[in-house]
Length: 429
Image (cartoon, rainbow, N blue to C red; front, side, top):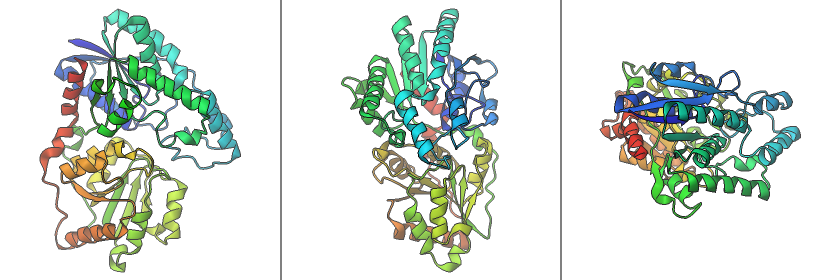
């Protein structure tokens, strides 16, 4: 079997979409003739923003997992910041942005480049070299964020000349919250140079959407043809034997995952405000994950605070159960520059649930394109509040007369984790 070494900071017991992406690849690689080895940070030294140990069940017992310690700068952050949690998701869990927090962010953005988890790199590089020599591994995959992980691949390519594939799940300095670190021109340029080196020196590049491929290809000449798009997806095993159990008295609209203030839901709030009272009193908008004060405040100011439910972060398996107890699934893309390429992992699990999707975001973006191709929901621009109201009324009326129709289009199966792993294997050759 061909051997590959996957280097990833995020791995169970950490939770989140980035963890699921590579846990699922590792689950299916051995079945398809590839032997994966995994190198990750030791949990005793890691700073995870989310914990989800339930993901460990998907890791085959035969897969060898190795750990490297780390010097975690985020441990210092928690000591000095007013916000005692590790920030994530565009600072979605940040409660206070006072002067002290701004100073901490400035230090993070200008003196800790590319990110605070780079304290893992020297230990990971040493361990990776040991594993490559011991097991005669010829191919290494580094996945980010954190983008400091790509510098591990850059080092291994330079010193060992192994085949190196860089998996870039998110933009680098184009990520929508990059400016919240108050980077100077010098710091921004350093980030750009690091990114350019990774793009140039890697043998292949993987990213999650067509628009991100275009974005990375613009960074430096000659890399477009070596960029492969392998999106996130869903695992059919996760959706077996789950009953659709919706409340007959209420219409539930659910959002699963992290949401921050850049997620523009002002149109949705206005749409809900304009609904007939008989519908409004039987509507619930459920957020399964963290939600910042700015968004709850919008609901409060509109007099709709009683319509929302917030569960907080839940394990992946529980999140899937929530999908099946919902009538409609809300998908919002951040209202930021270059958002056409944002292809959030939750979209594919929404597709697998076969529940109707209410999409709010760029109507010409990659996510909207997939929703159209799979006939899986309604697409709205950020300000299309009238059409949103009409859409909600349509599904409310449908639920009153019969069950809301399940999507019958089977093209969503293209995004199964097994099919996506086959694309990954093709990229390895």
